[in-house]
Image (spheres, rainbow, N blue to C red):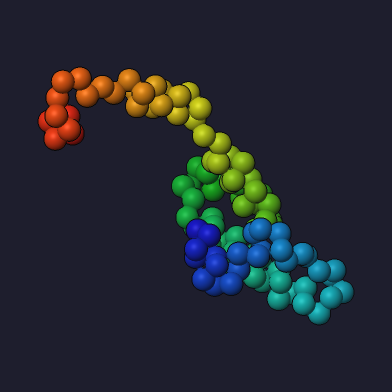
Length: 101
């Protein structure tokens, strides 16, 4: 998603580089149109149940932060299990090719 936003020069809307102008600013309407367009792009990539849970968010930056908070966290228990499995792998008396096949 970041690549798509970057390719359209819209990543700044979700990373906070572009601030929301005042209502009286001549750029306000153009910025709002871009914000709504980015919101729709992101919403179309979401599963329907996830989209329903974030449809109340009206800022691309806020939506991005909500999704990041929700999905960026790792499954620490699964990571721990995988690390333990990796550490317990043993070659024993097998050759490297036998071990990997």
